[in-house]
Image 1: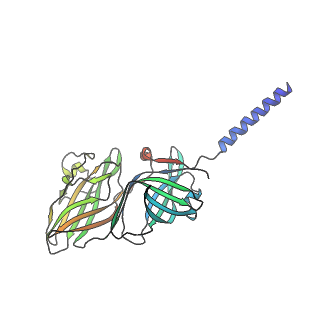
Image 2: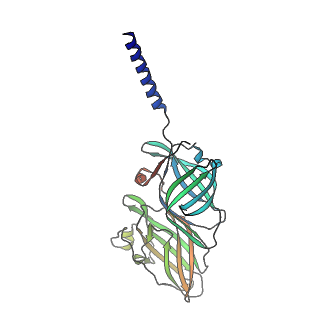
Length: 307
């Protein structure tokens, strides 16, 4: 009888210890990214780009710049090298009711090409550490444009209309005001977002229309509008007289993305049959938190190796 009592007591104690250890065991470390559109124009030798990821364990060595050896963005066989300038704590968020820390990596390109456009439809951020480990994080579309603008066309104004698309607050259209600074007639041939998942619907553009702020695309255009109809390839022929403004409002088409925050643009124009371009630096048209409950279905979640 005594043996049974002793065995029962040991069982209860062991079970209690197991429960305590289980409750005290730290949650598995994880890293979460939100693949989205990263659109950048290189405008300064010292500029950095910012990539935000989320973790429940910000003290892990992977989020300490002293342990980082190098970084790269791209696909498996085509990578663009970056120097890690800093890793910052950029706020708090939650994932499935679990508290998380947003970590921002500030990266500077290692070698600047003279005139190029780097595009990755499904980019991976590769972080290589001094202990030989690597962390590969999907970040979505990645675009980086290098080069200079011709000076005959100048930006006077740039803004956007905001509205709800598929239940998410994002951009509805972009309003652009330029000026012909030359003594000659120019023809605007193309206006392009530096993006693939969201594009400008140029056939539905409106000239000399000031659409701003909370106005919807439908109100601006004066007719119903669908954000998910792909626009046909279009070359425009918008004439701009010498020293005159060019004002245009262009709605967006969402092809393979759910939200757009910051993006650069390229305007192609010709003067006397000679083509030129104006590169407009990436601009934060809307400030929306990258990590929020509405975006959870697009998250990429990884459990980190404890090594």
